Image 1 (cartoon, helix red, strand yellow):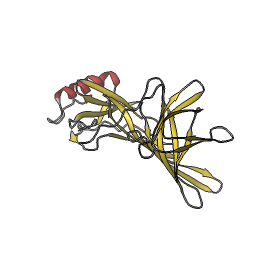
Image 2: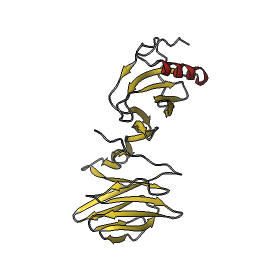
Image 3: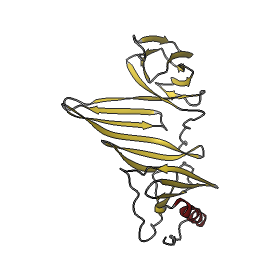
Image 4: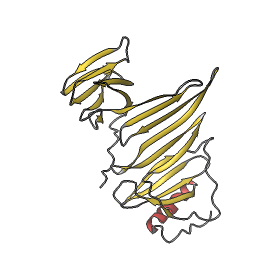
Length: 264
C-alpha cells in the first residue's frame, strides 16, 4: 500500500482518521475534499474509500466521524487505487453526490448532514421498460428537504405524463408536517392497520382516498382535524381548483427526516 502523503491543506486529524481506517477495511482512498454539509458555514472533511466489494464515505463533523455506505457492486465498480494520492480540494455543493447504475437506468443520491447525522436529502432516478410498442421511460425525483416529489412518464407514443406534489412521511408520531397549500399542512402517523392524518387547514379541503374500492371522499373544514385512512400509498387533496397528489413514505421505528438548515 502506498503511503498517504496528502496535500498540506488536509486537516491532520482527518488524515490520521482515514489512515487508521484503511488497513482493517482493506480499502483505498479514491477521492477526498471539503464541503459544508450542514449549512453552518464550517467545512466538513470528506473521503470516499472503497475496495472491490464495498465502499464508504467518511465525514469529519466536529469531533464525530460520520459514515455512510457507498454502492459498490457488479454495475458500480470501485475505481482503481491512484498511483499518487488524490489532491485535496474544496467544494461548494453542500452535499455528497453519488450516481448508481441499476438495471435499465440509474439513480443519483445527494447526502448531507441533518441533525448531526448523514441523511439522504435528494434522490433522482431514471429508467425505462421495454414493451411490445417500444420503450417507456420514467424519471422520478424526491426532495426530503422540501418534502416534495415529481414524476415524468414518457410512453412509446404520445405525450409525457408529469405529476408532482407533497411527500408525506408516515412516522411513529407527529415529527414533521408536509405543506399542502397556503398555511395548510398534513402529518401522518402509522397504526397497526391504518394511517392517521393530522390536517391543519386554512381553507376547506376535500380528501379523496382510492387505496380501497370504491374511492372515499371526505370534506375537511378549516382548523385542525384527524382522518383515518387505509395504510396509504397516496391520496388526492383538492382545495378549490387546485388538486394535490400526495405520496406517502413509511419510516420505521423512530426514524425521521429533519428539516433543512435555514439559510441566512
